[in-house]
Length: 85
Image 1: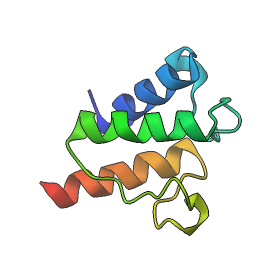
Image 2: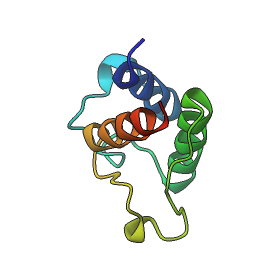
Image 3: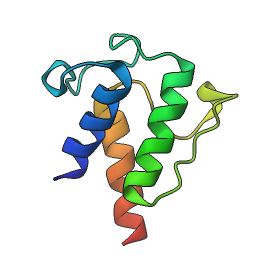
Image 4: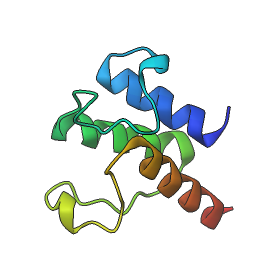
């Protein structure tokens, strides 16, 4: 399973949606993911890839990690995974 597929699977699970409902252009708001769901998604992603995501839930707009849409989240995770390799 690719990074993209796994991230989409985790986000879909948090949003209680089918994987097919989550597109790269989807925003977390589009998917009905609130701040708690976002934090749970980040934890699940960190666990799945054994990485640390530089995201501050208390200051989401101050974070260097782009959560504007699913594609940007995937891109950020791919970068973190490749840096760790």
